Image (cartoon, rainbow, N blue to C red; front, side, top):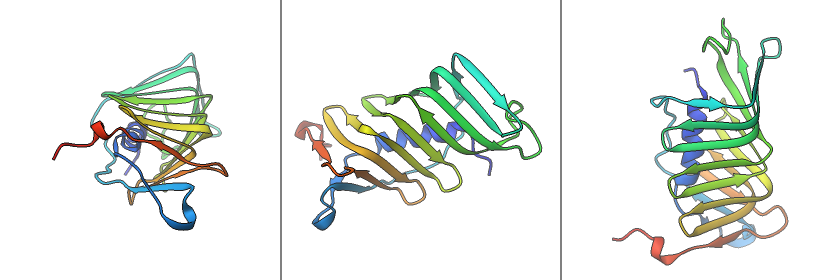
Length: 184
């Protein structure tokens, strides 16, 4: 099945929307993991991409969006200074929509917003073949209303829904607001 940038946006939203992360016990105390449920790749909403410049290089199979990159799909918005889409031609070009996306690279301050949820990082990478999303930076921050999660690397295995927030030699910080818990 061909994967498109809209898959990335759905996945990026899922990282934020998946809920609260819970600390791992034992020796891995500086890593936070969670099992995220309900992950699905979806192509059912239109996607709009804006940037100051788009360069498509058919020889290297790359589409590079630079300067104020903004990607919108439904309620989700992604912003970055640069986004590189690596693709296979599959008998056509990326401009014609006949290319399969292999990987999306994000650089120069990444921001993902949907509803009350936000993720910020210095860079990001989504490997479409392995369905792995990684956000990295000096400070990777996830927020959901008043709940805050801070680390330096967030890895989400989309096939299994497993997510991990690493501390990179420091400590993972989580601030939870008890009022944000679902009412039962």
